[in-house]
Image (cartoon, rainbow, N blue to C red; front, side, top):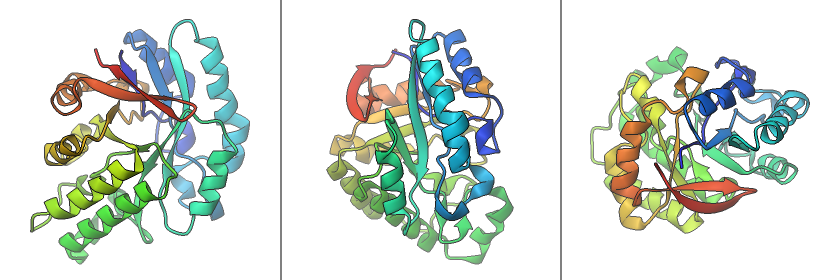
Length: 266
């Protein structure tokens, strides 16, 4: 199966194209499954510049994806998902939002440490104003807590903190291993996300050191392009498939109504 479980739309305000544009791109590339996972709304206008509003979710995004699922049912399996954020203090709101919608799956990502949007180029200078090791420690603490929250099915781009090429000055394997143990205990999945190859770090999320630990712990994997243009659907999946073979037995996890199954990637 060819499946891309991480795509965005114009509704997040930093991507191009409608959900249908991404579905059609997946069909043109011979994919059998495409996941629609635009950034979910959050309470109190949290990060409103980079996500759809609650009203847009209900009036535009949800009906569009459900319509596409029916429209293309004989051509491609369209999955209804969102990329959610783990932000301490919003857990109850997010849990209620998920419960009120019949998602196929929810990606859990960390984009903020406190008020700092650490993957936003506008604020990249803050890496030079703080201890890089402490940034990594805080980031992986958030990843661990996101896994333990029970809110998500997939951990998205689980070493996003490296996006601009900043690296810790000491070995983080112990911290990463404890984080991955929490992921394993939670029963959720780690995403191989090819978008890192299109960022300054020029490396897949996560790097192979993390994938080795995930493999040792028996954590299942899934695959997403994190496409922000239709042209990026399935981009660099030839490289990602090699990692799936090496660290995931050639299998990827897919979801229907938040129930996970494994399929062989082709």
